[in-house]
Length: 396
Image 1 (cartoon, rainbow, N blue to C red):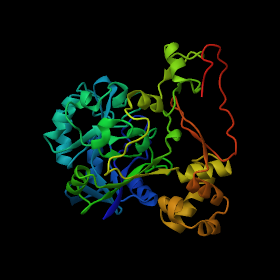
Image 2: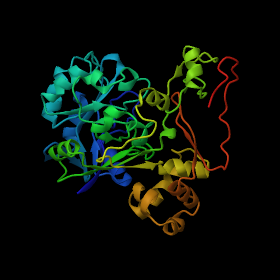
Image 3: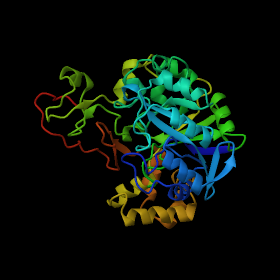
Image 4: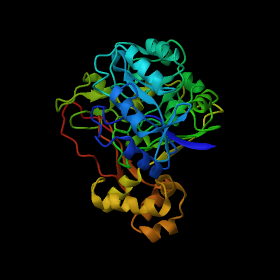
């Protein structure tokens, strides 16, 4: 059976997460997105585990069900050097035991706990409990594994189970790195809210024998991911090298010469695009035989927001999004499968944008420095507004 799964989200207990990130809200929104399996996130937080037990039914073999949505226990942990790791956990009893064993001062406060353990120590700890582990958003400049290491084996010493690409990278970028040819890639949303442009904005299509922890583990082991769905990397907020204060895109070589300081006084963050170029072994991707297709997505709500020039969370845009879902069941179907003629009957205004998305003619102003990329339907992209800078005068 083919299953759409988003393993990396956060609960209401994570910092900067919406108070609405509760099972009762996540389940229906995940269904409308087109998912069948959703990670719980934050599965080392005792309070969140209590809520999971109270609001779901245990379906067996690691699956917790609510409102016809199946949940799998997952968590993100911040380890040594501020590197983030994604962990998939067999059941709640194991989650509680690991939570108790994890050396951390804030695990009862923040859904994403911090620990002094490094990647190798975390791998050793969770492997004793049959968990799956890999780097979360592996290339991002603040907390990705590759921001501190040139090799995944320098971080974990042994081979982890997967590599999560993150919103600012895709298969075509990651497969320029030779050591990753043996790893399955995960594409997950890292959602902090149940808004439709966040939850499920990236997901994995996996061939499973059934919906269970054991089946998911086997699928990752045998490379049974059939497709990765994810944002166009330019939309990611760390794709390009940019200032974290004024968000000006800056030539990485010029940024280095200026010691990663922008003329506006802000700090420049190395983009995922440039970081991958530093450690790449090939000028073009070399995909292993098992590597599945990568399907680029754009959140439907953001397309609607751009077309109608209203905020993505306004009643107007959310109402238009809901009307499309009511007619065509899931966002994935609207973006990829439903005929343009049928979409026009419901919302003729969005049809040209979906057509442009499908044929790849939509323009994107690249993101960087913590600012998401911007969708544009203009023939020529207007230059991003920048702060005048006499030192850092070379930018993209």
